[in-house]
Image 1 (cartoon, one colour):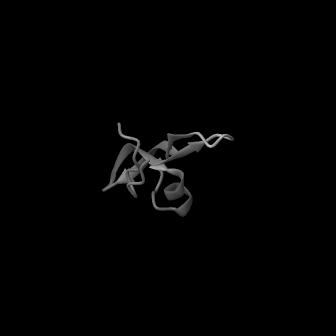
Image 2: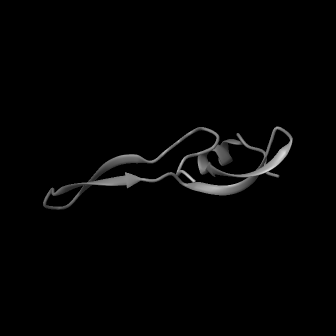
Length: 62
């Protein structure tokens, strides 16, 4: 399963890890996904939803 929110489509972003000596390497900012049972079209389904959608009330837990 992809690291992507099923509601808003939020995915991981890419940034830089910078040391004190300013050595730069790539890093990932992953999304805070939670596996929840939600109601979609009258059916109960388990999907991965970001915490932003959960706190905003964009999904109805089953």
